[in-house]
Structures are given as C-alpha cells and as structure tokens.
Length: 203
Image 1 (tube, rainbow, N blue to C red):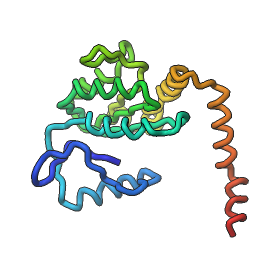
Image 2: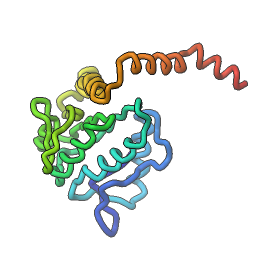
Image 3: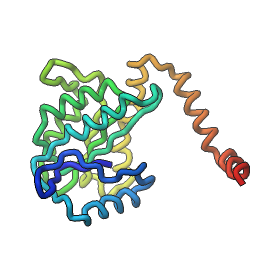
Image 4: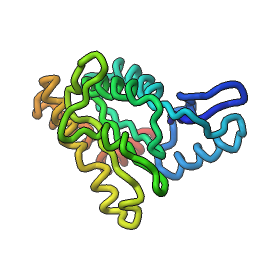
C-alpha cells in the first residue's frame, strides 16, 4: 500500500510506502494501517497531487512477475491530478502489462473530469510520444454516486475487469484453456476439503 499527495517536514512525497510488510488481507486491516500511518505525524496532506510516481513504481514491480499473474491497482483520490501528461504515459505503459487500474473518486463537489478522461472507454489514450494504449485497462468510479447501494458500487468497480483480463490474455496469446486450468488448480488447492487435509497433515 502506497500513499501520494503527502509531504514531510522537508519536501513533498509522491510515493510513500504505508505498509512495509506483506500488507493487510482485508479492508479493516487496510484502514487500520492507514490510520496508524497518519498518526505517526511524519506526513501531512499536501499538493501537488502526482499519481504517476506510484503507478511507475507498481509497473516496475509487475514486470518481474510470473507470466500468468494479473494485478489490480486500486487508487483512491479526490480527483486532483497535477501530472496528467505523465499519468497518461504511465497508464499507457501499464496497458501492455498484466494490470488493471481501478480509480475511485472520493469527496463532495470535486472535479473528476481528468479521471473521466483517463477512463477512455470510447477512445484509447495516447501519450506524448504517440504510443497508444494497448487496451482499456482503467476504470473510474465516483464513490458518492453509489455509496448508498453497496451492490451497485461493487458492480461498477468490477464491471470492466473480466473483459480487461480477457483482452490482456488475448494480447499475450495465452489460451483460455491455460487460464481455465490455472483457475481449476487454484480452486482445488483452496477448496475446503483440501484445506482441512493440509491442516491435518501439519498436525
């Protein structure tokens, strides 16, 4: 988990690791890590809001992953982006990687126009070098529009994810049979019977 739009006593901080271990496994743990981080009083919220440094960091981590791994970057922001050109470039780069980016806009009466621009459903993004987004891999959702309806919020957040993953597999010529077999193996390992068996063997 990383933070941006922060500053310490000396300078702005655009890519701060909030949790240095493997990270929390549920939402409650993530929120607690976030609160603990803010209570340390080392960082304060600040401008400019630069998103590209975090995306570049995560893109670099993904490039060393297994060919069949797929990653989801979840970004929470108030909508302010002060490095839109660099962010477009980084999103375009991530479209060639096994990455989907889900951006949730938070806050009342904020300007989310740049986030809507990044969520280019009708036309793929192009960076300043003329490189075109390989596939649509970014979904923007405004939280307040769906906060009273958890089911609809979930649907909006995850709606494009299956197609984004499918498009990446097609781009990399990974067959549906390979993905299906991987899922079956994973499901088998995670089944209740096999989990109980594994626990019994370790006793």
